[in-house]
Length: 417
Ligand code: PMP
Image (cartoon, rainbow, N blue to C red; front, side):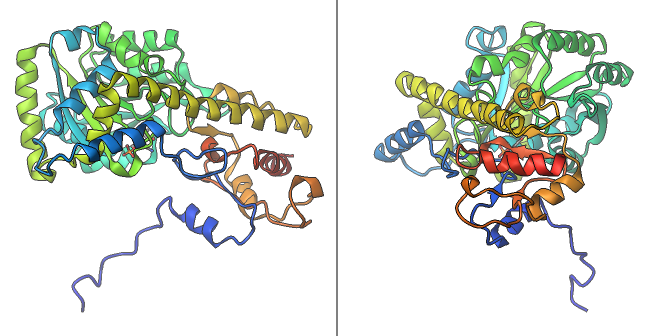
């Protein structure tokens, strides 16, 4: 038999949606499965600040030598300031150990590996229910045991704050707790600032170890400082924690894989020891990270003019998402939908958790539309909804445009009434 005769066929990944979308011949089909920003024409968007920064990087004709194990220092230094704030005690006292990573996923993986090796107590990590689908696999493969805490209340399509606090209190003292810093994926539901303060208190009381995943800083509210609120709060409250940062969404650097993993340490001396272990961990994984994307991000973060431009462009993306939420809700209401759609606008970030059931999501993809007026789109009278998104009812708001929101609302209205 062949060497791999007994390798089983794995299930299709999330990309199944994209395949179904591609195979659909209906011209007005809508893909709300993608986790990447689209402009109002539905096209991928490269930020003008990124174009300018990239040109500067190319024009400066740098060599292609290796970066150090922890990456491009001008990038990691600026990334830490972006997250923690320049006036934070941790930055001022040089007690943040940081390494560049293969975007957010790589940062989570380095964190998982570090905790599996060095965390002094339980190797369990508590993640919210639900959480980004990859969290489970990343942490499991890092050697941690993944446990869930309550987060989403399907009855209110909101945060189950009491359930969350109850589970954090019930977890053994010193547990590792993963927290989405902002724009919780997949629900788009974040704790309020007041609730974050309470979470901070519980985490402190129980001596838990927080692990922040911040994949959307600036992309959620449009304000990088506001989105970093929980991270900065925890820092100011004297927590020791670690942080995964991604520049995929907020700089649109998806495929460049720009990210950082940092540990907020007790002292500069501790930071040195932690830093040495991060290097020991990274070296056999990939030796050192790619430089191009990090150089672009460094240029944007360190050049005051470009930085200002970037902050405006992030806000532009966040604002478009926020306005598409409002437009979708309005269109549903205008159609006479009897449902309460207020969660669409109270949620934040790239995704809306609609509360639609798997059967309804199936219908959205495949069912033939019942009514279809001529003015809703050109021509045909019968068509499938052809709206593609994940079965859990999560839709990517980035895939909504002024051009497709009306037809989308009609389809959602039909499968929910
Ligand atoms: N964490 C969360 C919550 C995410 O939604 C994502 C991206 N979908 C990531 C991490 C990592 O993404 P990337 O590796 O592209 O930075």
